[in-house]
Length: 394
Ligand code: GLA
Image (tube, rainbow, N blue to C red; front, side):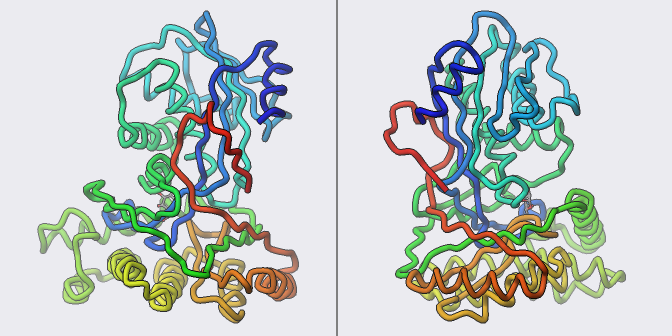
């Protein structure tokens, strides 16, 4: 924190007043279900984004990110917030300001903000949603806004959908804003009802592994999948009164599946329905302390994402396959949007070192480069940490 404070002074020539921490997230199960009205089961991580803030007297803002030092200080005025490709990463916080100003009116002054994130960039652990929620809490704190965390979650998603133009669901922002230490969140994305479930892994730990594959086509493929499940829903709506695929049980879907003539579209819809039911079963297994069954459902989730939803690819499939061959592993699957990014595995604590070594070697032999591992704690959601002694590290 001292280094960050010093850096703030160097860049902006003044001292900061407030520090905000916003975590990254990992989803344990329930993938590509959020925008299909289903359930997800993510948790917030102990690594994330720091924002050091000092309000200004005028209406200008100045942003600086230690992760993108080559971009330098990105400055502008609160009265003209528009998406500008040359502002690069800063379009995320700008998008949040835009959404907030549309709701609360133009803010009376701007601020200087130094951002620093230790979420591996491009790993699919939601560095962008982490940044959005950090900015939301900056605004709430600086302007003492009467706005709940769930509202900030929705406004952050809106910034991503409308200002950035990425059509993501609600999962990432919700997990990051509403995270709770040592708990995962069972969220019904249809109603936004949620509950916390203790992550009592009893001698096991969550290990995240990054394929280190660049996620080139992720956004366009993501939108393509959204289109396919929307198409499936519209077909089923001709015969049923459902509002989302998440309302169907597996049996109900099987009875209706023949209505969807296109095999690909049918498979996509099947994943959305089955994955939602699988998520509910997985949470039940975890709460009954049946970790083995939870692990089996993680594997079934991966298989469905590979064969029916087709969002995995050689790197993710290889990483999951070699992970499952190791001692002490009870489950492994891709996490996040897919097409690269990370896997999440549940590994016996005393086997983690061996797991990393053996998986790295096997993956490297097949793919030609090594994966990266992160053993993270499950942490609280976005918050002001000015007076907190704890410094979180990856
Ligand atoms: C990305 C999106 C989320 C969700 C996942 C897939 O992370 O941002 O909304 O759809 O992919 O589960």
